[in-house]
Length: 500
Image 1: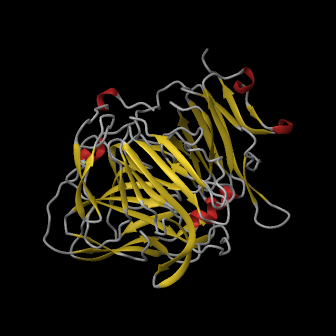
Image 2 (image 1 turned 90 degrees about the horizontal axis):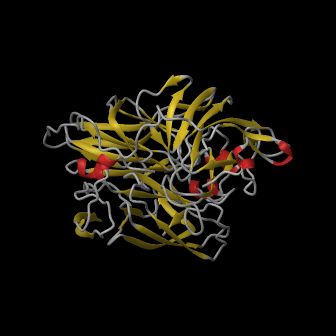
Image 3 (image 1 turned 30 degrees about the horizontal axis):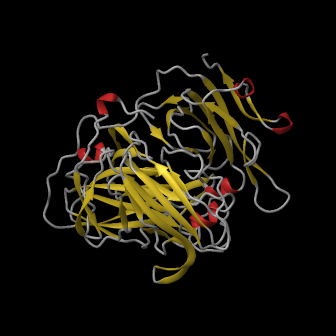
């Protein structure tokens, strides 16, 4: 992953102001850091905020303890699975170039591991390796080097041990990761809020049928329908995380529009205006919101057919209270300080086709498939060459919404149902509507190793809709051929024309 040279400005040896639980402090910025000089502050006005842990001198070292317990949600004691006993877990605030060390202590009665969702880090060894198994009672030492060209933005962490992802993440095990950088300097005068949406809690509760909302309400930073304050005319930056395990969220704010800054942590080249935000499970959106006329407004998850013919009901996510002195604040105009380029005119080395499917099973829930196959962690389904450019055509002929999420590298969305995307759209988790075809381009850089791609509806992921991909420096003749699995069954069809 390479930052364009015009944008590769390192900020070294500087101290930036930070806010931790309402108090001022100073971040010690090390000599290797590409951090923001003037990051925007979080608004401290009673809105619930997770605890924040900041890196210092290019390092962040912490212990996260994953355990089952109970959490008070809407004045009810609710079984949950949490990091450090809080819902959500602590926010990790990093800079490009930092080193991150996490000791993960597993206090569950089942195995687990940890995934840094959206982060461009190595999948090898004790890095972002989802094939690690941390047994009950064990503590594992993760170690990550954050590249200097890691895009600044909103990411998150959650368990990724198959097939317990839905149970553990749906139980509440999730926390935000904020990578600071040039976009934060650009927006330094605009205060920000973190809005992590979770829901369907209850350790041991039955998994809901696909398309049904999970048990319990949606919560924001651990609170049901909190009140968010804004002044009329004031501009705020909201970092919105869909950390539910299975639910698509279509968000609407009382008829107001959102100014979209970033999708899945990747800053857009220019802002987009959207009347509603569709955020798949696992995705993030960064938006600017202007306070409306004095009064109360609802940010709502509007009715949405995640399975055709079954509409999930409308639900209030939070209440916006607009009051106080009127502000006159301008929205940013012109290009944004983005981190990633444009692959639309680049030469494609490999074309692949991935078809999503649902397979009836003799008993229990159906199997969810990719090209007719369910997940096998011991089978490598796709081999990519480091530095190559691949175009994947993703087809969803089913009656349900799915997503395509791939680890380690984001991808650029090229078209949806044959219609070209008219802006530069980098994501790590794209929505696939029923009956749709979505084309993306993937450019693996920096890291070799084995990782996965999957549907981020975690019920689907845990029931088979995941595959193993590896990146190598040099393809063998066998790896350059179309990807196949045991017994010659075709999993991912590809047409390779790699240049020698």
